[in-house]
View 1 (cartoon, one colour):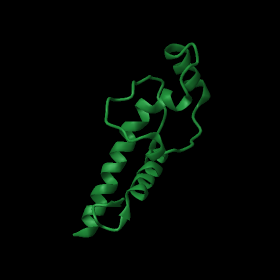
View 2: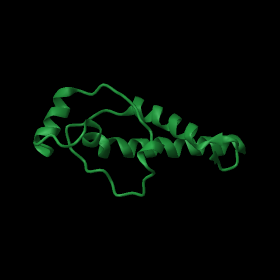
View 3: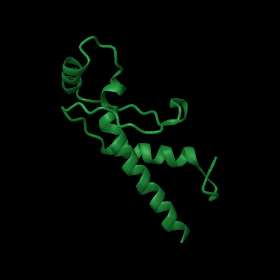
View 4: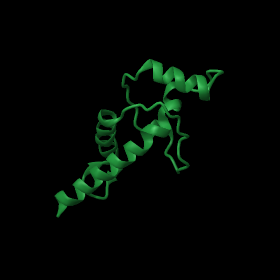
Amino acid sequence: MLWKGRGIAARDVIVLAGRRATARFELKAKYIEKPEADRLPMREGYHTTKRLPANILDDLREKHDPLRLQSDSAMVRGQFEPVFWTCLDEVIEELRQKKD
């Protein structure tokens, strides 16, 4: 799928936003539920790796997932998604400005 007929693959827009979000993301010691939203299937989402402070992740898990049922990404998704969406909005706005 091309982004708004501009010859830019939607996947490329998502990857650029994801890279920016990953660079900006700092894990906080506060667990945040992932926001309710319409999401694409994970195969169409952005996947990344970033080293996170193990002590913070362990503390989050101890308080909010003591049975260790959730993945690491599930534990931080509520913090990461808003950063990603902000970056996605920025990328889209930059593309709009380049068109003008």
